[in-house]
Image (cartoon, rainbow, N blue to C red):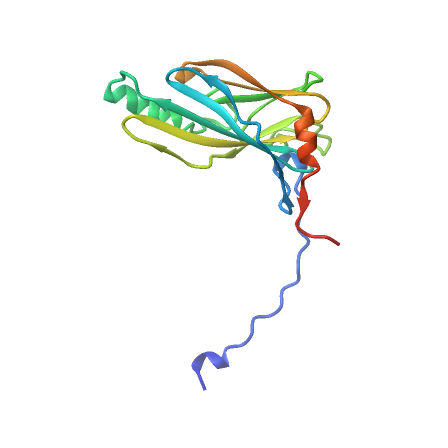
Length: 202
């Protein structure tokens, strides 16, 4: 008999119901999104680009996939190191949204949301959050060398804006990027909503 054969089986643990995650906290974990190839430049000049690569549409909201890139021109080594460090877009403070890359969305009805590190539950009481809410979900990686730097970021927008077009706006003061915007057509988001697929069927 093996030593390990005599070990007792661990007791069965009661299955605990999982808490329901609010819609503003992120995309549903049991859906395959409808993808909108809404690629477009939010800002572009001879040195810097901020672009929307695509939008993933879920039943409750959408995920905005952004990329930013800077190429070196005549910066000194020290100036370039500072640009590379800034381009990482590290959060300076969970309460300060006006540092690094500022990202915001305006709905057709005039409501606005600015990207934040934490969702509204960190600052608001109750379950009557109506939105819109724009949450920073982190980056998807990046690269840098002596000539260029590029990084990506993902932003969750809730609820899904279907009533008219909405506008994505960005600004990055530390990199000298002025405010720029890109229109997201509501009809494209609605079409993608029809392509959302649930993982499980009853």
